[in-house]
Amino acid sequence: MKIKKIKINSFGNLTDKEIDLSDNINVIYGKNEAGKSTLLKFITNSFYGTSKNKKGRDFSDYDRYKPWGKDDFSGKLTYELDNR
Image (tube, rainbow, N blue to C red; front, side, top):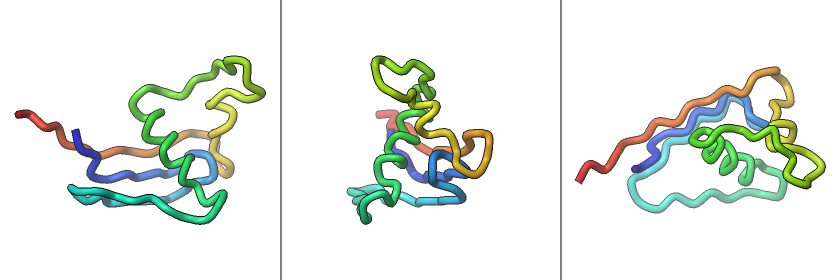
């Protein structure tokens, strides 16, 4: 499977972001607190859901990544399957 496009409407501090990924290697970089880890968590949560379980932590993923400016999580991944 290849992720082709990431569209984030609201997830944590990320709003209205659209990223087109190439077929080869993609590098995500930026300053501290720019949203790199939040982007990776968005991808993971898109496939597996956002947990409300704290698992011994102070905050659950649901609370940690709740959109700052909006009430609902929103976004989309576009991908293609490798059917070889």
